[in-house]
Amino acid sequence: MKKLILLLLFIPVLSFGQDETRSDGPYIFIEKNKLIEKKIINGKVFSRRLNTSLYDTTYSPEKSTFNKIRKIAALSDIHGQYDLLIELLTNNKIIDENLNWSFGEGHLVITGDIFDRGDKVNEVLWFIYKLEAQAKNKGGRVHYLFGNHEYMILYNDLRYLHEKYKTSSTLLNLEYNELYSDKTIIGRWLRSKPTIIKINDILFTHGGISEDFISYGDFNIEKINNTMIDSIPEGRAEINKSDFHKMYYSTKGLVWYRGYFEKYNPDITDSDISKILRLVGADHIVVGHTTEERVVHLFKNKIFGVDSGLKYGKYGEVLIIENKGFFRRTRFFRGTLSGELIELVSGRE
Ligand code: ZN
Image (cartoon, rainbow, N blue to C red; front, side, top):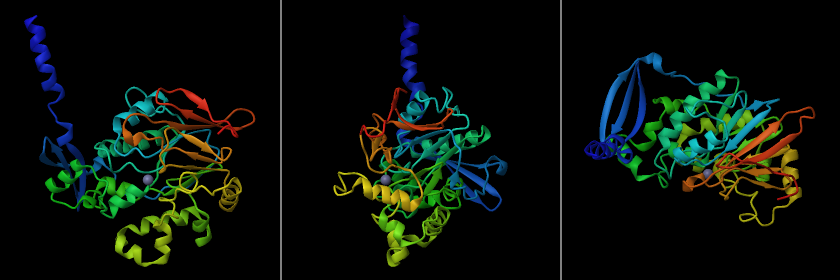
């Protein structure tokens, strides 16, 4: 009995030895020929030099178009909810019990907004960073797309930042956006990410594609991705000055648009959506950014909304897309938090 009491007393010490609310990182800074890792443990900063061979320091922009992909999973707006993300991916067999890739040659698309609100942003970023390499090794892919919150952080717009990260930035004696500058591993990696991609006949982007955006210039997704990334060093002030950037970062732009959802745009019709799809040469568009209680399908499966409210930390879903079998018919499913698959049938919205 005494032993048991002792053991019970000891458990909290073991599991709470590191206070998660006061621990953060690692942040890995690239200096000339060195890598410096900084971690915050229980409110104190620990620095050490790392072997330069541990991390790549160059990340080239990824391809934006993929064809003949048989399995796709898409989710969005994680906002630092690491534990819920792991539960969702495990139960839907995208990762295994040891958090390793188990989706084979499938593609996992995260349509933006890992940053802000929650307090496990770095846990999510490093996990996706690891998963991306594992997926590639198995012939699969992880695509992490920029959302408005990624751009906000890189512009040091900290309106939605969790208190914990304000403390980290103070402790590390850097502005928050400097923790993700191009002199850091995650910062460089982020700058290789797209804002929009196309897999098979499906476009994926954070907010959506408005007709105004399409009519603004030629719709070339490689070019759009380059333009978005190239604008980062210019900063918010510069962006506000030019018409071009105003279109890219306005509520009509890819990362802020909400126009497919009736609650924001009651006048949108099926023929408006068909016209957009015709103009961009796709059959479906998958978006995040507008929060619903589950994965939703709109306009006869032309539009899918995958921001299923993970940000509240309680529930979330993943969209599963299958394109296999003899007829190669594309089928869409809601993957629930417990891993149940519910088919989304066109016309049964
Ligand atoms: Zn968003």
